[in-house]
Length: 332
Image (cartoon, rainbow, N blue to C red; front, side):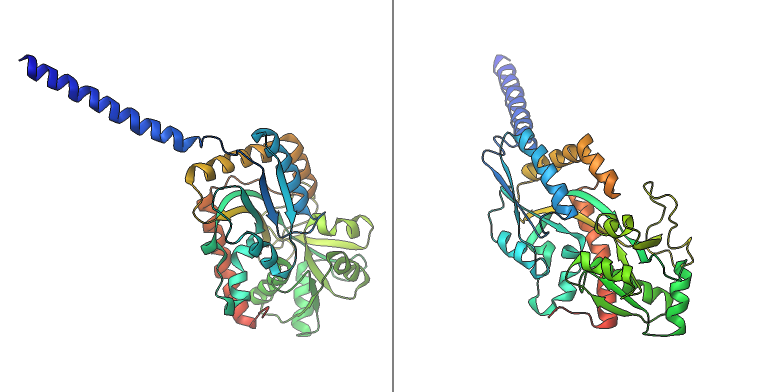
């Protein structure tokens, strides 16, 4: 009997030890020991002074304080995003090198550079969402058009005569314009610009008929009285500009033109490190200083998991693929 009791007790102790080991392992996974133990570098595909760059720097400052480590921001604009992508591609998947991209880098590049066979989310994995920005449809302040219905009517009356500008082939402004044409059965002429500031100067001067634009990129021309907003390409009006109707309210299709900005990492990042970065970025974004900046730019805070970022990018990719095929849009 003593032998049986002893055996039973021993099995109970071993079982408890096994449970403790599993729980201990889970605790280690949940809280990666020592991360980050050295400075973290975040490369960005955006130029210094841009909206995404401004957000990244303030979020990076918050992360640096929380982590007690330096968070370095390295700007690598140009090349359709490939300059920044190439700077991070092949780096260790350890959380010490991250990359800031937007939804078009995730979803449009495979359709714009088909011969490269590059799919962003096969090389990188989503880590955290920073923000989403809506786009306004802008015309010159003295434009005769008062509604989106007026723009569509003019495009139908003279196919190919109405022009719209954007900050480059494959940009949200370009692809949003292509979607507007597809949804309304119109044909308009796309005029790409190299500089966003020049784009809205041209819209204000009437050199191009209209353009999509985010609030931070177009607010200079708007505040100077050079352009007007006919609509916001979103499901609902913006709290910052409640007087501006949605596309549908302004007589156009219910178009939702937006771009979201994220942090990604080389694939293979340990789940515990990814989860820590995700949680800490969410805390930084929720900070009052960051939210104040977001409110100024009408940036939207999103509670997306890494998996949801992937799903949203896939949804955009389907739309962009259709648009690129329709007009044979390419950057090659």
